[in-house]
Length: 353
Image (cartoon, rainbow, N blue to C red; front, side, top):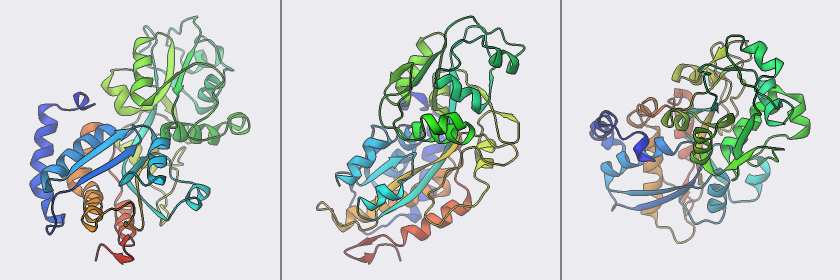
């Protein structure tokens, strides 16, 4: 995915920031190889941030974008150092594994992207989006769509919804939003990493969904905003809880996180009741075990894992978020995350002092 953002300007910014971030890293260990897996949603940000981190300390970070569900399974099986997930673990999921810590890494938006000839701007409400993906609105020139978009020439063509085939945090965020705005969706489909969409076309990962939409006329689907931007696919203005039609920007995503953040950082910010908020905004998390001595991992590996996460929380890494079309974490999320990292142990002893 590096081709999406490896412009000379982005790389210049990235490597210029490396020197600034080196002081926060541990200096008393050998370089380590770390592995993570999970969400494709933050992959463009992670590619840049992990490369920067490697320049700081010489550590190598291998990350597989296999979907949030796959990342959590790998962590549960104790074969990775961290999982990436756009969906925080439920109480039930947390009860089924050893204690974990959720660390938000950045904020982003799930956009509703589309491929319609001649339609450069599309407005949608949550209820209409739910009815489209439930198969209740079948044609692009449906009366309800036309009323929201009086200036658009909507075709008399069947709508082709595109959704994720893999267990996906992006699906969790999207369906969490639909459950909040549509009683029908809440009762018939609900929210989750995998949902039984009644019709349409499935694709794997955010890149797969974006690729199908890019190549297929009359499609509509949900993807991380960076993927729609990289593929040059238009995406809809979505009506928020204040009645405003909003596009995702750093400011509108940040507005969605203006409320309280719980101590463990597990929270949903979809359909936020805030002026200017983009309604399908989300945190994405790196999830690690609270006790780091597992599967033969060394203390140096555990220290390197925390060094990586501290770097992701640093101003140097957070400044990159807007360069690759995400939004930086609010200060309260970073402060709480540092507190939570101080509870992480190796053989029962805190790693951070």
